[in-house]
Image (tube, rainbow, N blue to C red; front, side, top):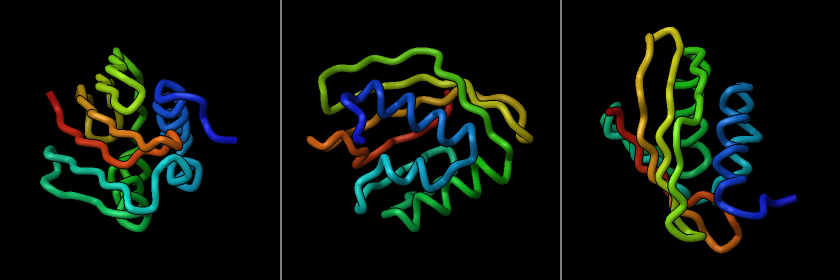
Length: 113
């Protein structure tokens, strides 16, 4: 069942990445979605690219994400501030989400504070 709004998608993504469940996370993205992460200097495109991103930066570093704040500007966008902890230490992240009309993520622009 598809999430009912962008807030539910953000919560499901955090839960999936914290559980290191790449398949559950990928189910939230459109097939052509993009994650552009300035902090690592790369863009990850499509399910294959996003899977690589999740494995490299979440599973390999045992990253846990905690929601600090979220602003849902409209049904198609969200700006989220998160606390990342893992083998790299501790960072605060800023995530700008763009959603399609089916509540799938089409783009995340990510950076660190």
